[in-house]
Image 1 (spheres, helix red, strand yellow):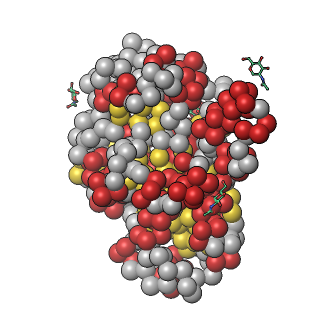
Image 2 (image 1 turned 90 degrees about the vertical axis):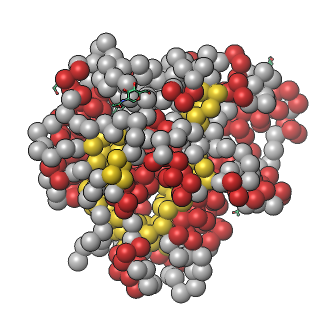
Length: 438
Ligand SMILES: *[C@@H]1O[C@H](CO)[C@@H](O)[C@H](O)[C@H]1NC(C)=O
Ligand SMILES: *[C@@H]1O[C@H](CO)[C@@H](O)[C@H](O)[C@H]1NC(C)=O
Ligand SMILES: *[C@@H]1O[C@H](CO)[C@@H](O)[C@H](O)[C@H]1NC(C)=O
Ligand SMILES: *[C@@H]1O[C@H](CO)[C@@H](O)[C@H](O)[C@H]1NC(C)=O
Ligand SMILES: *[C@@H]1O[C@H](CO)[C@@H](O)[C@H](O)[C@H]1NC(C)=O
């Protein structure tokens, strides 16, 4: 019999707060987690001031009591020094997800079938930069012994496995901005194929660094139009969209074989959602630019829907990848139009990047959690800053009339089936279809 895969635990570290509850509360209230680099203490000294793009989504610093980030709340000094920031975010989100899944005690769980699939798009940008600079200015002796292990993209996964003694599949995908969603898809397949009963999965990223922002700015990927008004900078599907906002954080899910969850005593009403189908494809077109028709996104969404055994008519909500770039949002919208353009009931499409920016390798995992919460709590988070949907001069306005883009305010709506999209540089497209657990 085919195994059913369900989600039993969630953990988040985002620009809207440390923890799932504060992040979700702020998200549905329409808050923005975006700030200006001009408020950073090292704005002049670290090179931020040279960069034309000034808006970022940073984890707020402070005490965990206020749902903010401070390493000392989670790690002693020695441990913190050995852990790259992206691994720290991943470990903190994992702890919350395990607790949420009632797995703070792992006695009696078969750890050989408990795996980890946590990826990162970039790994530790900070360590690469610091060690490059030290090597050049002071030579070999100033290269840190932990430089290599700290920078590797799979080290968050390694650290999670070591900390909890998880001996099942230990995997770490890195597909740029599709990483987080691919990691969940990998975990789903490991469970479906009986390599594991239960997995910690998701993505983590900590690339808020002036060199990273400089690189994205040189590639003309990040927004430059709203430096004075950071909360308006991320505006997916809006006529004035002009680039994405670089953000950081982590999203971690516990995904599990349904029987395994029930046997260890999980109450069915505590199951968040079921993973029904996973789709992935390549645009086969260009390293960063989409095809106008949205071919790759169309194929990945179609695969996820078909593998779920449902009809496109049944989908209630799409959490779009839409990063607030001119051509990316348009292509994704065209792909959604192609797959869902003839459905009878109203489809809601929102992009939560309007609130938190683009978390790169963590984006797909964080947004999957938002998609799951929308299903569980019948509340769709909004697309902020939507003044004129499809209003860019090269948009075709009538291509934006078919769907409800959930402008500005969250919306109460029963969601049975929802799709989460994630795309990445290199031309990768991926989608997961989640359903209400019944
Ligand atoms: C360090 O940088 C200087 C230029 O500032 C360059 O000439 C030199 O080759 C570099 N040294 C190393 C070891 O990379
Ligand atoms: C995590 O990985 C680092 C290397 O990046 C290592 O030094 C540290 O001991 C590990 N910590 C745990 C808890 O696994
Ligand atoms: C598919 O992924 C590529 C790579 O990021 C992206 O450029 C393209 O926009 C995606 N397709 C659509 C329709 O969004
Ligand atoms: C959303 O808010 C903007 C102001 O930020 C406003 O111009 C726009 O009309 C609002 N959209 C809707 C559909 O209410
Ligand atoms: C609008 O949608 C049509 C049909 O889906 C598509 O062929 C066309 O390329 C789209 N126009 C733009 C400007 O994206």
